[in-house]
Every structure is written in structure tokens, then in C-alpha cells.
Amino acid sequence: MKKSLKKILFTILTVFAVFFVVACGNKGDSKLNKEEILQKNVEATNNIKSGNKLVTAKVDIKGGATIEYTFDISLIKDPFALKTILGAKGEDVKITTFIKDGVMYTNTLEDNSWQKLDVSEEDMNKFKIILNDSIEIYEVLKDNLDKVSIKEEGENYIISVTKNSDFINEYVKKSLSDTIGQNADLKAKNATLKYIIDKETYFTKSLVLSFDAEVQGQELKALTETTFSNINNVGEITVPEEALNSNN
Image 1 (cartoon, one colour):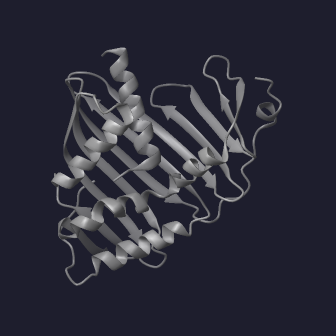
Image 2: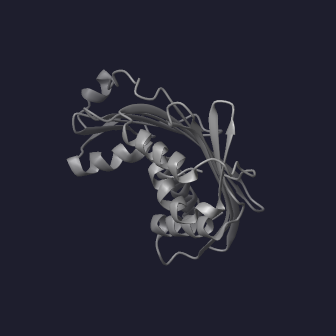
Image 3: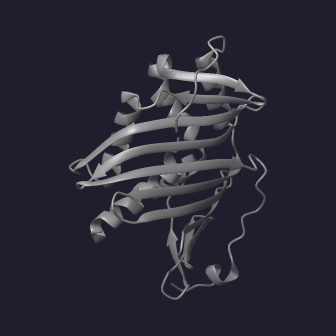
């Protein structure tokens, strides 16, 4: 596999891990008010002050390798603090990043030392949307509610979209194009969506995105699963002393 393709696949995984993760579903309950449930989910998401987010991402390359990543995130919006751990299956090395008090600390792969970088208020605001998946999803679904299915299952609402709906395929294609360049040779199909909303709090519990794509002539299947936990209950995020004391 070409090095450039590996880089593109890594970018696809990490960007989707941070900003959009969703997969398929079943026939829903026609008595449920789709728009009301989705709007309450957005309102609940807007009120999130902190939380944990765990993403697992997998890409199967036709006739080639399988690439798997995990992305473990803890975030407090105010005062802003963030910790992320990015790991790859089969690799011992993990990349840990902290952002606190306007400074980003990242450990390097070569010698596990730390590097510091000042982060602007504008950039910190971009990181704050890491927990806002439901808001972006609503923007995609709101004009296509006839293709959205919602059903009750125990303490949850299950939201899904008919397999391979054109608007989901187009959204995936646009997102990938924005990520790797508008002129990139890519196609997206068979996108499926499913996510779970807590009936009491309207917080999103989990999301899955599944799609097939062709990138630079290489066919692949991608699956990203996300779970949310500890909503509004994240304690102090502490930067290690060795990171704070780094001179890099």
C-alpha cells in the first residue's frame, strides 16, 4: 500500500473519530415524533459541560491490510481541558495529548518526550465540539426525516437510517473530500447509520458509522464505533509533571 494512501486512511479515521461517527437500523415506531426527539437530543448535547468519548475505528483494505485505531478522549469545556490517547492495534506506542491553560502538550513517538505548543482561543473552541456529534448528525438528518427510523427499546431511543440512503453517502463523500482535498479521487457508498439516545436525559450513548469507499482507486470498508460516558462528571484533567517541565 502506498505511503500516501496510509496517510489518507489515518486522516480519515482520526477526523471521523473526532467529528462524526454513525451505522444501519430497523423499522421504527411511526407514533414517535422524530423531529422532537432529535431536537431534544441536540438541546441535551448543547448542555454538556464535560464527558468521555471512546472511538474505535477499523478500515479493511481490499486485498490488503486491516488498520485499527482507538481514540480515548476526556474533555472539560470550562475552563477548557482536554486529554486524548490515540493508539493503533498491534502497536505498542500511543500518542497522548493534553490541552490546558492555553497550552498543548504532546508526547513524541521517537523518545516519549513532550512538546509544548500555545493554543489560541479560536483553536480551543474548535476542540470543544468534540462531544457535539449529535448536533452535526441532526443537521444531516433534519431534511431527510422520511428516511429516518426511530424506535423505543428499553430505556433508549434507537435512531437509524435506511441502508445506503443517498444523502448519507453524499455526506460521507463531502466529509472525506473536506478531509483529504476536494480534488481527491474518491467515492463513497453503502453508508449506514445507527445511534442510541437515552430516553431520560436525551444524551447520546453510542454511535456507529459504516461505509464503503474508493480512495485513489483502492477499495476499502470503514467502521467507526463511539461510546459516550461520564457526561458532566469528568473531574480534574491533570497534565503530568514531565510534560509541564518540558523545554521543547
